[in-house]
Length: 48
Image 1 (cartoon, rainbow, N blue to C red):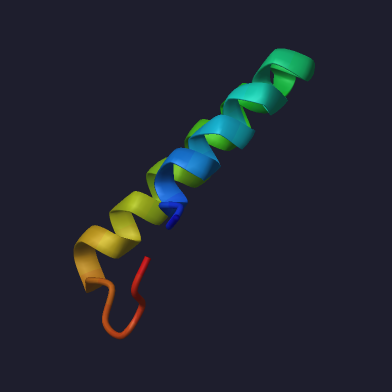
Image 2: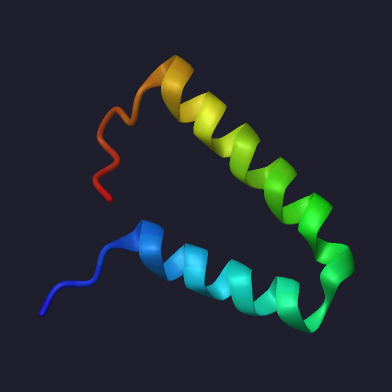
């Protein structure tokens, strides 16, 4: 059984947002920054 990284991160982020709603801004910002960096520079040798 293999587990993808994106759904796991989404699940953890969702639980954290439910527990501490103030984290929503930080989680969204970090997600957008990481997605943008991966889009600009590609994943290179990183395999998720």
